[in-house]
Length: 215
Image (cartoon, rainbow, N blue to C red; front, side):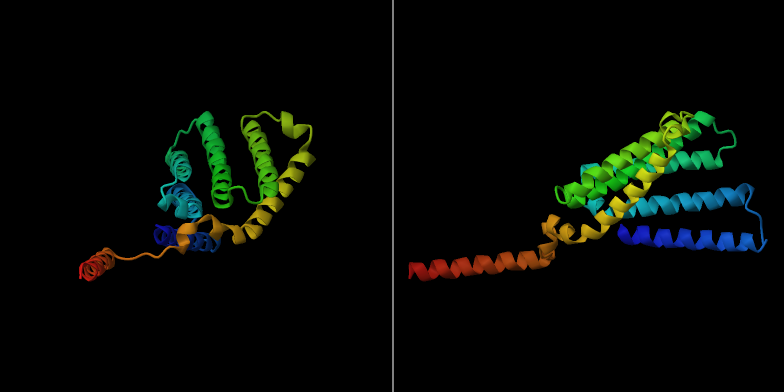
């Protein structure tokens, strides 16, 4: 799954970059179907990046990562509807933006929690509190309610900076905890044929031991 996501991401990124370069040199204009195609590729790229972030957890069929994966796909579908629909309702667009933003933040929180568990709680908790605050302010702004932003815009941007700093710190410090939280990485994987061979050898050894004890 991870390889498919990486290859798809690279393809979408390459085509998008090429389209932007050609547009800069006036080979074609970014309008109409071309514009829709570009935004579609960027949407697919974003989906692949978000899914890749939790791909190892999805392969383990973790229920929380599966829920986030479903949210990511729903967000993508909503965005594709907005991109290709000619008459998009303003409320639908706002719901799409808010839902997608919630999905991104949930992706960040869930992936960190499942990787770190109770490690670095002193960093995790304030990071998630700042993300929830940012989500609340953004949601209110999207729906034309500036009550939390108008009174303290400086506070909002300060919290955004703090949130970024905390997430970067988590990303750096979490590396030494990740392997400890996944004991299955220390397991050896064998094929079914090897397993059956081991079973036969154990059975033969048991027979020999039994025959020796009988003698």
